[in-house]
Image 1 (cartoon, rainbow, N blue to C red):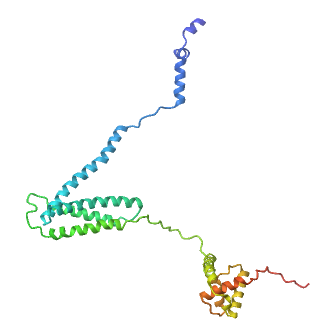
Image 2 (image 1 turned 90 degrees about the vertical axis):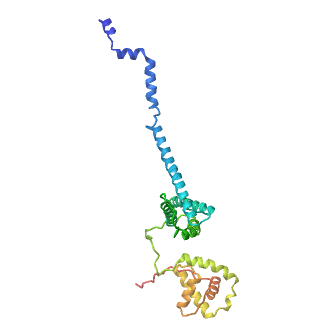
Image 3 (image 1 turned 180 degrees about the vertical axis):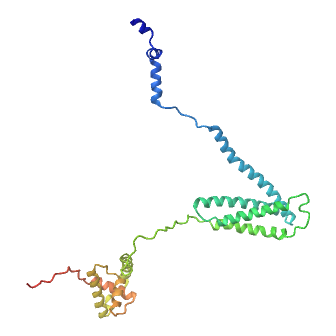
Length: 284
């Protein structure tokens, strides 16, 4: 009975017991994970990208050649010399190409594109008008008419438009303006201590070359010292602007130069520090 059970073992068990190397290989592949897979349609996608980049270039070269010949023929028909007709044709086509390059550059930098768009429209308009004029078997047989002054003025107009491309280009992108209002604003009635401190630093250099403070009137000097003491008690900086404002409020005339002399005189004199409030004694 034992012999029969052993002989009729399932094939899966026999494969597992008789092929340990295959089991180890399967475990290694499971630990290593799936192998690198090639992206679907890789070769086809590369061909599509190549054609998408090459076809516009080929089409542009063909359109350029046709329009180039038509502009040359119209310019020669309008009475321009042969070399001038070729240069006019070159200016029309290259102006349109330069405008496209400038538009792409300004799109990347975030600057206005009005001028290059206008230049592009001028070049495309001239090229299209020349193509329409030169179309047909009997074209360019009649009198040129308005094409004579148009071809005579075109070199000047093309130069101005292309020069404007360079003149209107911004070297740096336009700064972004914030639409959020400021969160905190300083009260209108308070002094700007930072600005006053900056003015005091600028006036410090002028004080070294100013005349002696002895030229100040005694009443003005006393008023300046009183204002300085009042500013010190309130914890505000003693600056030239603050001194001039306080002295004028006390009825004295004080110019900017006198305010600088007064500041030097006040700084040389000791200023009474602020005193803490003292509570009055209450009688029992």
